[in-house]
Length: 481
RNA sequence: GCGGCUGUAGCUCAGUUGGUUAGAGCACCAGGUUGUGAUCCUGGGGGUCACGGGUUCGAAUCCCGCCAGCCGCCCCA
Image (tube, rainbow, N blue to C red):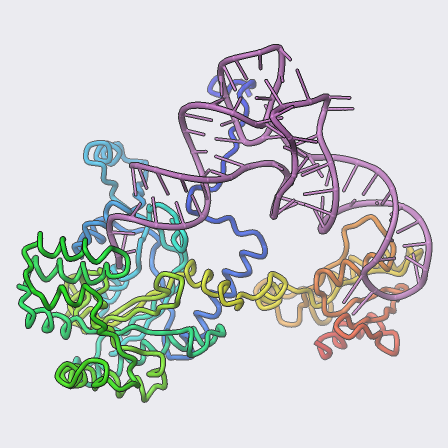
């Protein structure tokens, strides 16, 4: 108290708000996040993926390895704060030793590379967790967000198996979308192949190297930037290809997989693409998702490390919900053995917007139920019955602990019920039942004395015909639930 | 980093050309009626009107700044 470093008493405490682009999760929002994570987990596991995770921050250099220039500007820097040298270095060149993870792939590559020879091949991993990017928040984009990553690493590298694994990965993604209620019409997957696209551009006269990178970047911008400007940028980049200009100008090079390509593309292009995409298409049909898929030859995906198949899940009115592709030389880049790999990521922000747009986001009450936060039992006492009132808290404790009234190990929740009681001053049964109802309790237990109670089923509104002895209460409730 | 719009109670919003002590509904808390599920009645807590300056006898209201949110640009791993 005599500390002279204490702030002056006249200083008003500053009201600190959540940092820009972050979210405070009150019970309903926390339930929504948990529900989403559980859906992601459930679908991943059902498709044979194993859960992994890594640190939420990494050495900043990890993110520089795979060339992303832009990425470094959007890293949240992190440092230990203990080392004066490190602080000095941050002041000197503005770069801390660590960064909050902006994506999972580098961590994944690092983890896989470290244990490559002991892991099954192919190795199917998923994770879901928070990621951080120091961008300007806007619709569908925040600074802290959740992301679901699924990846398939390794395999024999044959074109046939690659197509199988690509298709399997796309299927996980599509089946998730279905599992949250999105129908065939509202889930579309745009698919392309970097190898096919590059060949196409080479044939059009685009030169490998800087020109090719620019061309890919420009294709990625279609729909976001005006045509005239795209063409201008292509020309100022030294690209004279009229083929590219046609692509940029919106020549329709997107076809539903199950449709008649020749009609839309002409015989020559159709037969070339059919040849290139046939293995993947066959596999997508095998796993039953081809009706969602279309080949979109203008899809590039900005990411530099993609080497083959690339895809995006798109929905009208929102930016891409998920995106991914094949990155066959990335593991090697992180010091691992040459390893074919394919993966995708889905963020929670756009997905939530999409579910809201479509009316598929469960209500707050539904979410609390879905994540099992609705009480099993709400305990109260008859009015004007002090003996019964005195038993409320012991009965609550007994039901929470579980059978026999003996304490169980903290990790052993078997038999313990989710039990609540009122903290209100009122003793009116009417109001207490209303409270139980509001909290969506399944049963109300109304104590009548020191050893007996009546049970009301709040779902049907019916009373159990006979009073229940407190000795049998837990067992009876467990059966009824 | 740049531009546009918006900030009044936990939420949705009123608030007149600048004029008493800033309001409603919902939510929350309490009391009453009813009396073992949603009704109804009454009362209560809660706001330095985002924040900081300025103009004015007087500012939620007008001006400037700033912060935050939303929308877009840039960028997208």
